[in-house]
Length: 521
Image 1 (tube, rainbow, N blue to C red):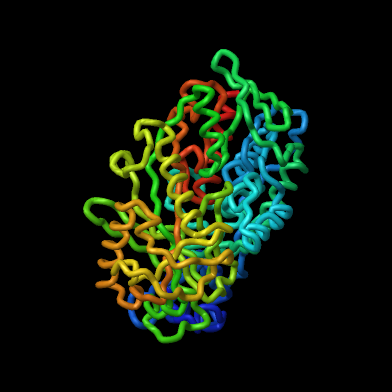
Image 2: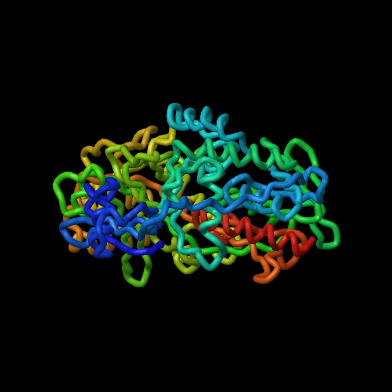
């Protein structure tokens, strides 16, 4: 006999089988010996009171052996001789689109502008050590996309897009920890993602698909408004009747290429601000109501939202036990992001703190930007990044300021220790950020100071600029066919097209586009 129940367990109880069995027996009012075994189906944390609990949804086996849950199978087949589909971009959207194409009996030909996941590491080391950016191989470009070296958070609210469980099962099949199947906020970790990405690539090739690196698309081949293929920077050409365009939110040259070829794109509002970094123990004490975090609890995270004079300000991509990374994709730009290893065991917690940007704000910003252009938000984004680079003094040194100093309009005489490897420089961030961004952040911090006194501290550093929260451009597509309204066979996909926001939602969109391609062909 089996039953599904929910129980609460203290951090000391939640990971010890005999304690969990005792709690199950008490919940069911049964003798302990009746509990044969159990599977944890879902695990979350309840930190609303001083005693923090794990909430466990459990499948209980009574007087019968345990049955381990099975993974959703990937349907393998050889597609080497099947009809080809070009997939541009090897991030989550592109990779999961390729896997789904194989299941549907189509051959993916993947084109990635950057290097494979192992070779990318040398370029990332150069960014952190020398402040030099390779515009084709960095934290955003290369196999696995931005997700590979940007934490691996898998939480999403995109359940209407498709089967989230299938995406998670795919990741486990390719090397992710099974823990992601039960945690409410699953996380892989930047240190484990490269192996998983490599395993997915090897599976695609083993099934007859193709994966090509150093293939930067420079032209879409179109005849009578029908997609026929692409041309790359090395003059190589690839032909197909369908193309999934999954190039990520930072592929500015693709947006500019579409615009030059008179292929419709649209300006898309996004958000911009800073990364804020605290010592992790401050966040732990605030969230867990303790002086020292229990070793059985993960480093604490947070989520904050505020309205300041009608403008939204919110936390983004919070990384407990993480570091701030240099995420620029071109020389002379300053972009920061955050990531955590699987154990989240670094001494700092960082999060994006960003402000919504709309067309009216750009028009009133004083910058020489055509607010009516489909590239308006892209140009705004780039101008702020370039200004921050100049103020940092080069070599990707980032402008920074202590939190309370920023709110009180004081330049910081010194800065706290910071995980950002290229280094930080004390700058009055009002000089680095557009006026409405700085004022909105100041207003939000004042509000949060009333609710989270330990959070509002000069031990926290603000580091500019967090600007790649989402794509500043949307590539339109039909809601039913997922094709571009002008170009038959062109399927805009994922974060770069403006239809996803994170690893799982991008992967789901990739699968959906693969299904749409199958119907089209």
